[in-house]
Amino acid sequence: MSNALEEQEIQALCHKYGVPDLVLQWLGETEDFRTANEYILHEDICNLHPEDALLCICLCLRVIQSQYKGGQIISEKLKGLVTDVITNYGHNALHRQPQETRNEERLDIEFTARDLILLANDLEDLENKVYEENYSDVATIISALAIQAAAHAEIAKYVLSSFREEERKNREFDPDIVPFLKTMPVNDNTRAR
Image (tube, rainbow, N blue to C red):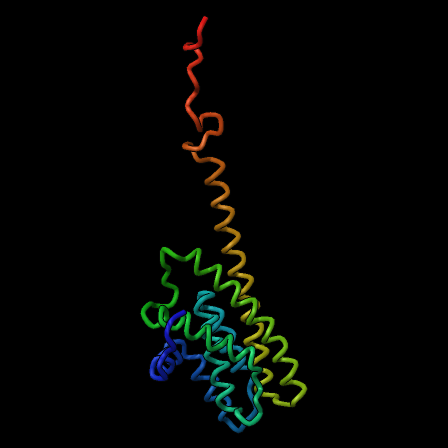
């Protein structure tokens, strides 16, 4: 596990993605959360790579929690996941451009898929909780975040299954792996006659 990010680095990530800054702005507005804002939220997160979407959603949740400290909207379990994601993915995100891929992409997508699935499940629970507690603007934002987390989890699972399928095909058609020639044949001509 990586070292925790400094507050300045977290703010840099919020600015990089833009969506957490918009969520902060929307939570500070006195008028109701508008449909146009929800569309912007979906569109901006939708255009991210799954790893970036995961980090961006967690940054948004961190912003929401900072605005509702008295209400303790976010559970301790979800806070832990948010902190872990920001710590584990934040360092890489600071040093690369969105959409940039790396050689370790397959390994990354496995962890990203797992974390997105966990996040999507937790957000579904959180969405129900905020609707019950009548936080209408927050509920709409969390609903959009939940939809995006679930969608990106599906994308990550699809990419992961594509990697696995490619590996399976490579194993099947590898010319260096011919089952009956794995060992050299034994010369039977040396037996005594």
